[in-house]
Image: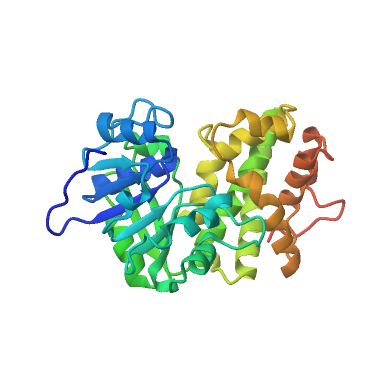
Length: 344
């Protein structure tokens, strides 16, 4: 049995499904904000380590977890009586996981997506998959996004995030739970823009990693980041997102952090591609999910459906397919042919 902290009267009881680096880090954020946090870990030995040692040496070596975090590999134990369910599983396995847990989630619990991907088969955002599989209203669903590199947050380096829901009350409740001395959550009601910002910045980060791996410098990367934000904004707005969301934490903020940090999985994946590794080799070397790699194809399909041009993401797709040499990517990304184009 896991070592469980008994919540006092008025203490929030939350579950986090997924014990990778981000799920564990967000568990710490919530616990440091005053909640009792139950973590679902797929492997019993990892659940035992989290509960007994307050460590997750596989994903967050050297980080001590709060005493009000415990874990189990048994879903009924983790979900029993919780008020909030935070989902931190690979985006491509979300639907299958929801089919397992939907009868276990309390009928009035708020469900929060911590994931930054789109479903490859359907092109659906994570909140859409949640609504479809759980059969719950949009008012019970929230998403969290922003410049959130897990290890930095686990070390309690100050940062901020945005929580979005169609219900401002729901977003506010989740943001209150996810706020502490080093982590501040803001709110908005633009779920579309917030989710797509988190997805699209991963694709630009792969491009930045590629040119970094090739050996190009800061001018190239700055050009790609800037033009990448334009692509992100045009895409999100085409699907109903608000442009100001892409200028905020869920867009520009997350884009800068993910593109500039070696802690970013998507940046790392791109850098390996730029160094000449094949897509298959990159997947083998990555011990954690780089969501951007799985999102390229469905995002391009969605862009085509709305007539949105995404030259940067298109070139990343060609590198992934092996039809473009990574060294040829920067000229394609930073120019539009011989005719000068307006910046916006």
